[in-house]
Length: 110
Image (cartoon, rainbow, N blue to C red; front, side, top):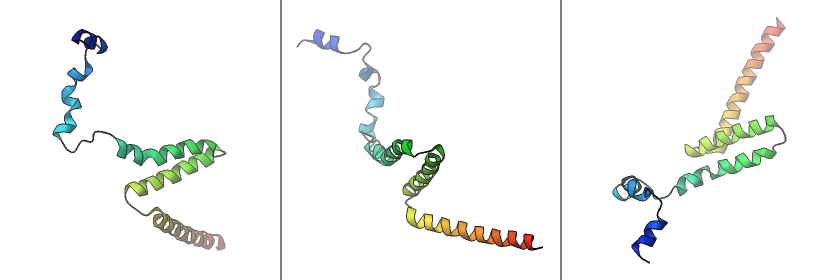
C-alpha cells in the first residue's frame, strides 16, 4: 500500500490532525479518562427506568414513578441510603400531617 492510497482513505481535511491537541489531552493530564464508561454505568438505571415508565398505565403513574426514581437517583449520587432516607421522610410527613389534622380539628370544634 503506498502513500497515495492511504491519503485517499483519509477524509479532507484530516480531523485527527486538526484536533490532535484536544484529542491527546488525556495523555498529558491523568484526570481525563479515555472513555466515559463510569458515566454510562451511572446513568444506566435511569435510562432503563425511563424505558420502563412508558408502560406505567397512566400519565399520573409515570409522573409519580419519575419523581420517585429521581429521588432515589439523588440518594445514590449523594451516597445516602435510600431506604433510610425514605423512612425518615415518610415519618416526618406523617407527623406533620397529624399535627395539621389536630390543628384543623381544633378549628372545626369551635
